[in-house]
Length: 370
Image (tube, rainbow, N blue to C red; front, side, top):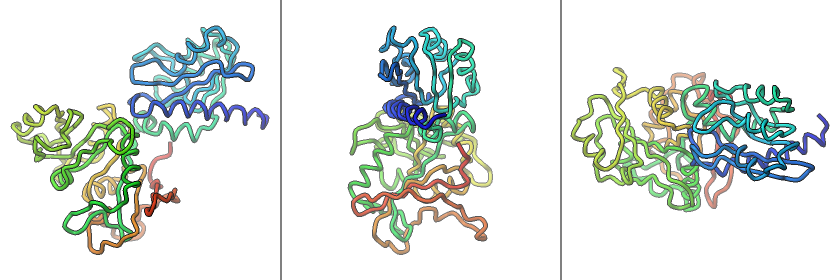
């Protein structure tokens, strides 16, 4: 490929990615997809997947272009689908519109697609190319890839912590370790995820809302790990019915009924005999079945330690404040290692300064590649 062609393809693919990002929080469990139609160096149509069950990006772009789609190049960050779901498949519609070429960022990991969309286009005489800005396209839809390939969501642990690794004082007080701007960024993270998860200990200690209030965005589903359903029915987290409790099979029925009357959903899971809690694997597969592909874990030390020990964290988003808290509750304080060979290695951090805090984003090296 000529360097000028590569630059052109990447330019329009970045537009498709930017369009796809507009669907954040609205399309799960579907992927975020954007499409740009280019003809004679001019954009003749564009679109993105706006909501789950709505028209796909390619359909929106074709509607805008009309007859100008014939002979155009379609740039789309994900291989066009070839199967019927909530909407008809996109690959045949691109073929019917007589586009000349389709450039995709990556193949669709959905076993029902996985190359068949590109094959459908090629059978219709349309040129195809894939792998343009593939890493960026995979990162955009990392949650979708996780659910398609591993049957679980992408898991991000978010916490505010001191320089000496504490997320709260020994007595449990944690308001406020980080500054106002960091808290706004944390709400932005919530808006980018399908669900936010905490343990019942956090609910009983802080009575959090777990909503998006400090920035514009959609509040995620609130998930509470509460094996015995100790959460009061009037807790703020129960709120507007967007709350899911993961409870044990033996949790009292009367407590379940009180929460359900407030609009909460109860999902009962089998407990592990050794821990008296559901396994992290079972929790994540259950959430994937509920349509969750991006999960933000905001729990306390116990919950974070459990996810970390299970090697089920894909990303840590940590707001580090320039303070020492001394003998407090550590980020993964319940994680116990016997030797250095068990240490959980992390990729080099992406570091941003947020007023007086540092925002660290790191990926465990044990997180499976996309």
